[in-house]
Length: 89
Image 1 (cartoon, one colour):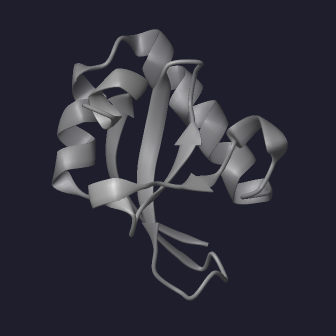
Image 2: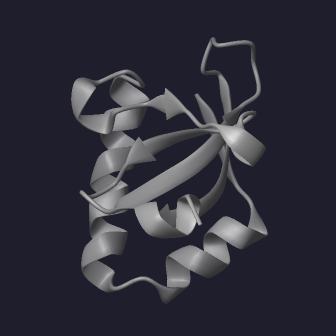
C-alpha cells in the first residue's frame, strides 16, 4: 500500500494534540494491515464528500482519504483529518 498525505492533511495533523497524532499513527498501522478492520469503521462519505472515505482515529476524529486504485487499496491519499462535527458542518 502506497500512502500519500496532502498538504491540507499535514497542516491539520501538525495542529493536533500529540495524543491524537499518536493515535493516528496507531490507526494507520491497523489500516495498513486491514483497511476494513471493524474498529476503523472505514466508510464512504455523503453529500459533497461522496468521493471520499473516512476511518475513525478516535471517537471524535476522522481521517479522510481517497482510494485511488479501484478498491484494491494500493494507493491512498489522506486528504484531511477532522472532528466529526467539522466533517458534517
